[in-house]
Length: 101
Length: 163
Image (cartoon, rainbow over all chains, first blue to last red; front, side, top):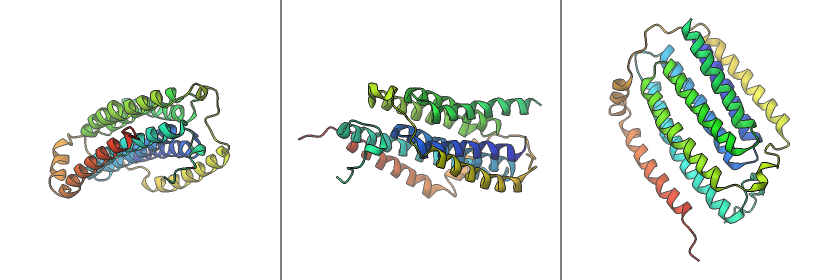
């Protein structure tokens, strides 16, 4: 397998995630699509590490950081979603128009 | 040969599950597809020889994030979600934007055409540990700060209002 196979897979995954972020009405669906985009970036890091810089593990280390930050992001995001849902009783983003406090 | 077969199977699982995440009408099915897609990405990591992030992906993403999203899907839903439209009316513009992104990614990817792996996959855990406690020590410690802040934030946002 060559590098461009992995790059193509990552690009397709990123485009699918971007489509989800742009079109989903459900806030949880948007969060899931963001996770897809983060995973596409992770595939790129690991692939470049394997094919171009195989003597060091810098790409793998960056993936570790991204995974940790994604976990933190999804925890805070889902806590915010639950807080908003308790107030507005909806998960659809076009109803979220009174977020001023 | 077996490498191509493995990559094809993993890539088809990843892409089909990702399409399921985006296009499924029921959010529950989307969340289950997300778990499948993340597991497929873990397989891609394994095929790239990155053994440590393969394990981390399974532990954190499949075991943690997908399950957490499933919990929230079960908590924040209404019966009317099963019948209403889940995609907004701008999907045509979104397809266009995604095509532009794919085109630009293809322009970048052709510059790396034909790059082959020169070495056999080797265990990466020792090298990652050396980097985390060496060159990346300060970001590594900052990560613990971020985890603490996000934990406090989640508790504050998630507590019940006392009125």
